[in-house]
Image 1: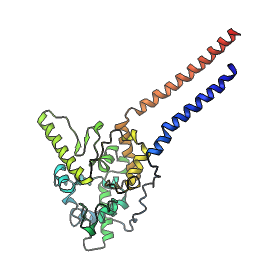
Image 2 (image 1 turned 120 degrees about the vertical axis):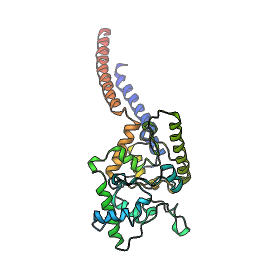
Image 3 (image 1 turned 135 degrees about the vertical axis):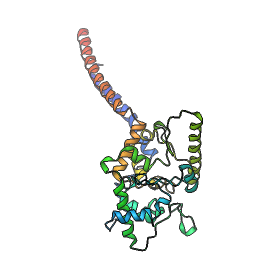
Length: 315
């Protein structure tokens, strides 16, 4: 019996590992299509060939570009022309504040978004201009000059007013990239912003009503209400979420979810936000797991010594 113990241990370890593989890596590989990251390079979009001028870009954004007709720019003191629920009823989704879009979005994507929203967002299957299906964001057709230069100027302005890359927080990245379509219940985040504490019940009910009205408009626009992302980091994992953000069409051909267009740094911040909200105890859990493994190793050593002592006494 004593000589068979290593063999028994090897068999137990083998079948334990096989069971784990079938339940975890293999099962997930079958349930979720594996997609390699494209590195947020947006190779299908043309690079900017012009050097933008910030002052001219400001004039275009505030004037001929007509951006402030739909978008707020809070950092420049420009409020939103409509409240979120009214904007969603008008456009399907609330147009984002442009204050930090220059830090969150890739500049190639931002440039193409200004000139051809449906193409940049990869929703041309849903918005076909030839069939009269126009995207709610109006394309910029130029202000009478070189349109590529004008767009480069607008991009330069938007980048100039945004936070610096090192100042980009997970919350800023998530709210700009995902927060107008997805709620995060764990963070009290709704599609119209974080739900505050209310002293009066009627104020809370009014807020909840606005959220429901917004969600109704969003569901009609998207075809279904986008899911709450509270535990997506745990149910899907980092790789799936990052590659889905990068290009939803790679996973769900024909989906109404647009390509978000974030740069690589902003994508990492989005993941960090989801980890902090959906798996807030991960660092504590890792520390506990390490201590448990140390305990098991020590316990195994004492068990082995005790076993040897018992066998020695028997002999």
